[in-house]
Picture (cartoon, rainbow, N blue to C red):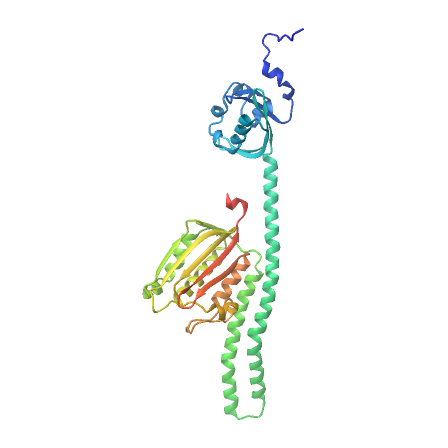
Length: 373
């Protein structure tokens, strides 16, 4: 005996009524992208109602959906009759966003789509990822601080041992039975050593404070504005050298960084480029920011005197190491710059050719997933 459908019963709802009480959203689309069946969960997923969706065309209900990765998967199953699965985010017309886990299968009417709203799960996942990144960054900083402490011990040993030995020797000579004139000479010989020790001590204190600062304040910085402010402070020097300074911050316009440290980094690197410019050519300095291998990078390039890297590479960022005969050269700028950069988990390296110029590249910080969006 043939099955008789009672008047007023919707064939689509009758066939797919098994899905009415599922916790997943279920929708059936025909070959014209018309909603053939929708359960209540799916309607809620779509910020709509069953009545508003049934019989309507998907592209009319959700304008722009045809441009999404989600819709491409729908098309693939619709026309190739092969199942697909994906996790995708969708932005609604009101600006709200939801994440869905979708399983798409071919059916005689067109396709059936089972969907789970995993927005909360994604938020938890993002928060866990953020905390994991913070923990990884913290471990990297601890490891870096350990390395810096070892370097710091070497610096103290190297920079304080010799002057202290000289002071002890001069003290012994003063204590010996010499004339007043000799004692006065020995006393005068102590003065520059004491002054040098004091300067070194103050420099090492500054370096120590940076290394021990666990709460470096960061803020969102406009890189172009900050660089221009630094350039303006060198106005007289730039004018006297007739130097040309250009910059390009098109790729990275803003940074989340320590404003104090960034200003010091730009100041020290720009100061070196101007100080060690060549008298044979007009100074040209180019500053830029960019992303490379997952890092936010800052670079300053000049056509100055350059550095013999084969000879000085290992000493480039060490305390009191200078590479040109300049009265203002103290060998402290690059040393403190390196410490500040490394205190925030970054790195600095240089490329240089004698009489052709130098390029200092700073890897400021590693990009996160959100930064890459």
